[in-house]
Image (tube, rainbow over all chains, first blue to last red; front, side, top):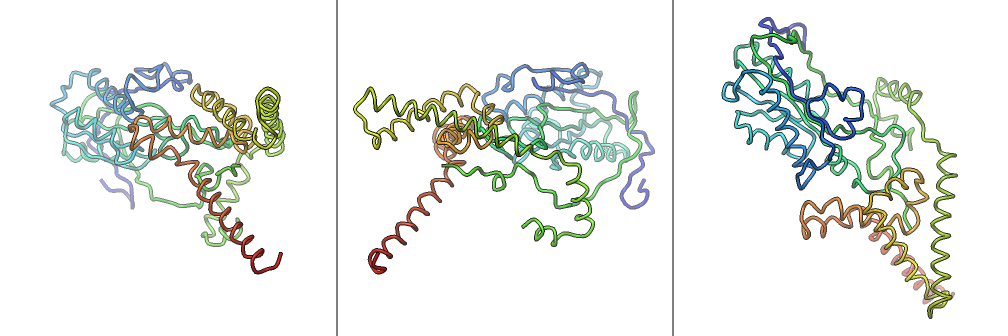
Length: 208
Length: 159
């Protein structure tokens, strides 16, 4: 299974048999809007906080992924997920809602592929028949945690990034039809000294 | 400063940074300065108009009109922030809307709105001054140091 130093080759063909995707209002105006299963036109998604909205999106993504197949929730062995919020609460609460044994991950944006790689490895080795793997993020929740309040009038540089409001979930199986995960290469943490141009100290305006 | 930071990095990282710097979309500094000048100037003009209004129609002098003028500007900012307009002005104007007292008001109100979901005491109460707090801390502290220097100079310096 191990090829070289950090690559896995999966011989038993772990297959993505279905996916569930949810997006927010900004994503609804994007070019891949037609490929997203549920689009919300409200950042709050009828919840009383952005973090709860993110959890709702993650739950919806998992439910859609399950609904597209005839796999029952009880047949799924593990749920592998993570997100950007402190203590990965949206993922953990989704784990509670789904009532499926749960692995929590944190690798920022890389979480989506990390969860898929680990899920494939488990399915490939016979550790599970079905695994739900996915990740979620919410623009306003991430802004609040990593940058400024959403209504703060700070000027963003042209290189500023925009965190997605959305959730994605893949149902991985040891057999079935769909894209097959053939291999995964796990990356190292590399620091090239590039600093975020939006951290507080660097951009703090000289007020008054 | 930037060179000092660079020396600590590995040669590989230095190479990557110079590669990145060449491709980075730079801030349009000149354009931003012009925008900041005009928007900041407009805010000051509005402030001056309010100040004159208070002096002309109410019983204020040029010295005492300052406080009600600042309060009025912050009150207007509060509404603009609440309606989600001020962050758009801020993105356009940059320092022009951040440096005047309205920027200070925006920093307080934006934090208050942001942390509303955590409750009124532990959310709004404790996070309201998260952005504006440092300004108050260092403003008060530097005023204290300057006052101390002035007192010493007058008492013992014979000024």
